[in-house]
Image 1 (cartoon, helix red, strand yellow):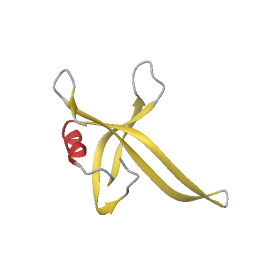
Image 2: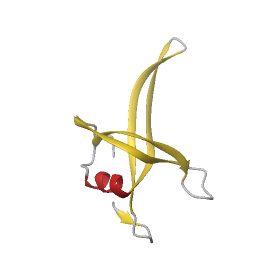
Image 3: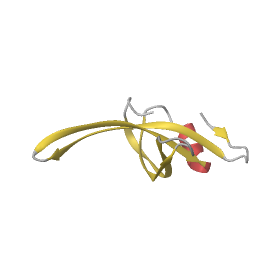
Length: 91
């Protein structure tokens, strides 16, 4: 849900899900995870308008959720929608 900071900057919090398979030490390893993300300004508007489950590629930086929090959040600085891809586990 798109919201605004006290300074009027649009911001949105969302989750991304990832699933992949990798070889590690000669064995296949399944990787599944969800990550909390935040986007501001134009990227926030794009995410807020995207359909639930849209497939995206993101880039950004990790930072603590707040000054007293140890939880990490991905601050999205780059966003690409993958046309035709849709993953029901992405949010």
